[in-house]
Length: 362
Length: 97
Image 1: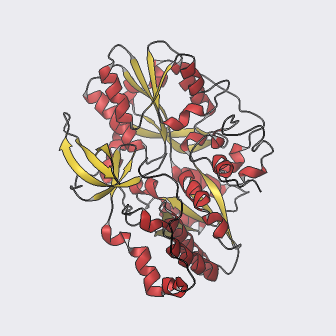
Image 2: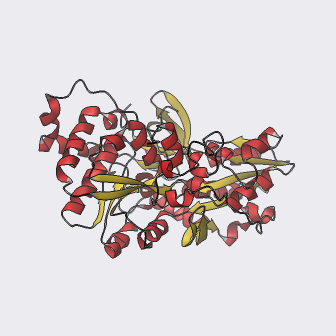
Image 3: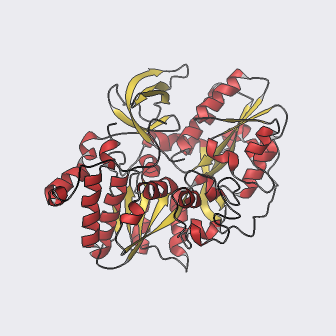
């Protein structure tokens, strides 16, 4: 398939690997932000083909993983209510809350449904005017424009039975938190290509300047990742910092302006707690007051809920790139994709699930 | 969740609210897609689709940049003799999913 197959070509991968091995004269630690990129790296085996000079640590770019426990518990409380149709992307269904998960609520008779797009949830609300349809609006900047469109269309359609349980997060404040940590070991970033397709990459320029590090906007196929690693290594070796754009076929500096405009009209920035990491100032989005009627937290009055994490799970250290998943004592024993303690073992973008699926236990 | 899949635009038509909606072909699988954020996408062009939304058009000229680089530097030629017949690497996210 065009724009897919050529970016998985083995000969091109070998050529890029040779270039990386030649150019990386010193050891470097890079972080790929997005969990989708982590999975590509492990599934393709690129992580094992890289020279010893390159260490990849895995970033917090897994929306399912960083959605706070309280918000999962709110989702569970709402999904249990009679008359509610609770809709979500499939990844959220097995994420453990304090006591249960959405899949268990579904099996107990709750009306929990997986949707492909938030607009499918809007359609469900139109089709079932006697039911309250709630959509679990999690995700990074990539998913904010689709979710903003769902809120906007619901308002245009005058729907009073549709709402969003919002847990949106933003990448640049998380990168700032990682770089500002005294334990930080990241020397260069592979920025998430699809977040940048929406937001552009101008936001990363002050970060690169302040911390004097290279940031390379990178795509999701193996060739993209190898090319992104090569560009970052070359910048590090020559002492350059700044932002480079590997994923130029889909990303411009300004990003997608119509998408940013609707996100601004529907959402506003807020402080947000990240599961396993803690509160990061200005790192989230919430619905603006004009869209308060579509806020599920207000509609179902679940705002005050608090919750405690499993003491065994080290998801926070993994999401900050401080530890690798297989170094967790619970990895593959008390914690597996079938019986997860933490969200990174569940999600298709979680680092723990990638290590488990692609057998990186040693 | 930030999975974005490239596909070819088959059709774009405004819906009842005036929002452009249409269909995209992902290597044989066709899905309904919202074009509100790529209003200039035309039939036959390629877009990156995320949760039912086209978030970006694919720039054909930029798409070959990495391969141009490999050809120009001779990186591919250097390896051509040693390499067996190329086969694709497994990547995450089957685009036809």
